[in-house]
Image (cartoon, rainbow, N blue to C red; front, side):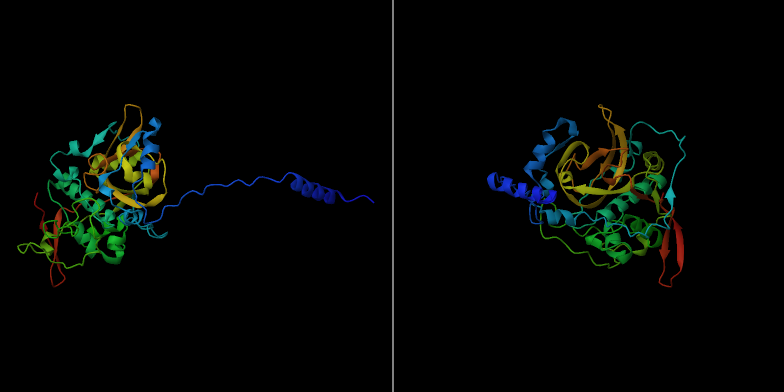
Length: 356
């Protein structure tokens, strides 16, 4: 009696395994970096710098010489927006026939505005969302009204509360701009940034919790309400590069958020694009210009707030026009208000003309 075909196949397979067993190959597991591993890695620097086609150079940036991956993730303070969080936010677009230059740098376009070229340091706090917003609004007060002022990151960080997110544990850039409209923001002279003392050198400790909202100026000669500067509007900018460029060209620097990978911590110069490493988190910075390299690569020019020891003297470039790391998806801004609102104890708003 003939055996069924499937029985013959099974018997043949078993016989072949007995006389010629398959070799067992040991595969070396890929090491997984823990949050306690150091963020700076020689392997990343070598991988980036060994490939000339990458377009940028990496180094062991002194800014993060003592940072672990966990500490680095903490300073990336852009929280993902809730699904229904942007429904009411207007989106700015510009006509396609608006002529724009091939390259643009806000520092040279408005040389009278000293704040545009300042590189700040957020320290160990996940306050990038607040820095990007306050820096851009400061720039825009100068561009639109000739007011060279530095506004307070500390006010926004400490006093915006749950509307903006979780302070040093991250926030939402668009709600920072809403805070400017609804509550205003005091000057840096009134309320300086809390994370200055002891954090001027790379990797300094300890990290700091969100500061308390005291609503009192450190300078006793200043009154909190009288140093408030308000926004007139808060909006998103359409993700088309033309609209982003037009907004920057017309109104001044904008705040952008993007996804940061491990290799970004090692950026030194050139036009960044993601090469290697895992996702670390979301980060917000100030977009100040654009251009095209000699090799024909379009780029954005941005100011970071990781001090001048990181990147290209605190600045970096990233590929423009293909939404690299989501850089063109979350662009927010707003216009400054010409008058300074003063909210009295009686709850009545009065206005005075801004100093021009």
